[in-house]
Image 1: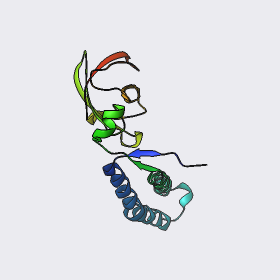
Image 2: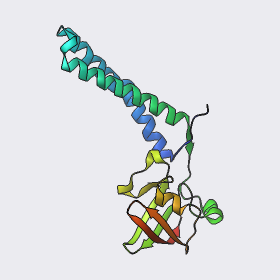
Image 3: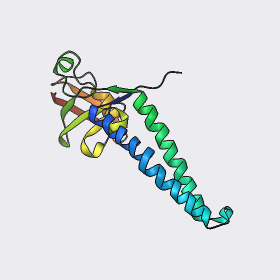
Length: 158
């Protein structure tokens, strides 16, 4: 079965690689040391410290596996690709300025792995991200969100 594509900016891919490196080197060793120390206390069958360390080890190994799969399936998206914007409107990597009843907002359309709505980085799989894809400046788009239907006017795409 082929791996699922993970759409990332160059910076996003670099962050995942840094996190993977940290987990494989520093964090793995810290957890290994915690398990070793917990074992030295004797009966591990009732040791909450040992149990906690084993749970953390499981989490770290799971995250390492997840990151390796994401990096393996990484597809780099180009931000500010003017040629693609002119042909296809909003796409992965686009910066989009929209206006609604709430005022103007700016979004960067990214893959789910990099989404951070608080900083304006929205996933292409989110209702707003999906709704904006393919639209150009001047378009009015009605998008069904969890809070109800919102009408956006696309002001600028870059």
